[in-house]
Length: 151
Image (cartoon, rainbow, N blue to C red):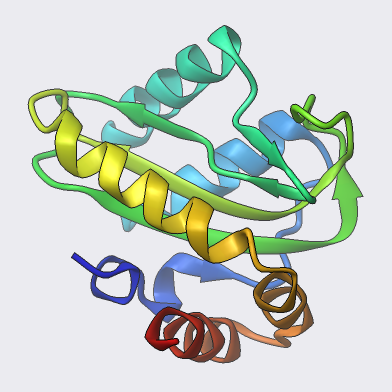
């Protein structure tokens, strides 16, 4: 499964409006709920619980908050970038500007881990991070992600 199959410009926000960790998580969860009431609370709780165990800030200004919940039947992905770095308790101690949210069902841990790995490999490349952060809107972010995933 490719990231471009899970992510659409509707689930990308450039720029994210939030300036703190809690706000970014809530904003990203809002992108994957598609306005369905009720699901967002379960998703946000799952992501916050995972975040309380260990920060999902993986370094180089990137975070991949994620969680598993029975509120969803398949993997959901959202992404965004902030104009200013957000304190996120990342593993390297640096603030974060580039975010990918992954929410999946509790019964499919293999898919969940695969997507996390794909994102990690993609954003490990400095050029990819720079191109995604330079995107002016969701469509450009998505296009740049697709190009990077094709290489």
